[in-house]
Length: 247
Ligand code: F6R
Image (cartoon, rainbow, N blue to C red; front, side):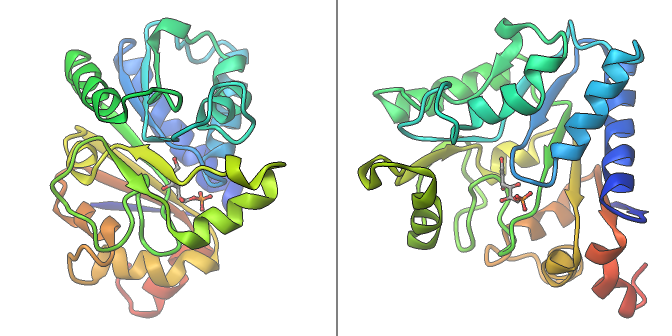
């Protein structure tokens, strides 16, 4: 595992964008696994800037996203489809047909998850998977104490997540209670993994994930067993690891 330190959020975003950029320059037909959340927004902004300058081209790139809420379509501002278009896809020359995100409006979730796995496999697998790190060590929607052996599947959201999301919905009945996520097995099958982490709030969980025991209690700890992981983190996120003298 490589750990790359950046001074701050902007530096983290630029370094991670450089790694994605190199991947796409080396293979114009790369399959990129993408994430949502607050951490990767700066990475997408940087990639957009380089695209506008003509330094990177997404025409042949395929993307597969980690997760999506069940019940939300592309036009819902809380859906990950909407997020990806707003923060990234609408600003670069990626082809709509090359964008893959689980369909939150699918009637048969089990079939949708199986189709998603098939899509990833038909694309030849994920070349580079971008990940954020949840406060409790989750990756995708793989929460603590889940199985390490799942591919794309439906998860029941935790009550805290449901209540935290409620503020974004006019009708409480519209708050998603389920999501679809690539499983730990799908993530581990990616050829390369790039995790971005920012801020002191993640310092403890990052330390546990990278240097603690590999355990389903900290889903991201499984990444210790992947042969090609790069973690790009800022000073705040690495502060606890640094006090142990581990970097
Ligand atoms: C999003 C995702 C989540 C986030 C994680 C961290 O697609 O898969 O696992 O990466 O919740 O979110 P932020 O970056 O908002 O702290």
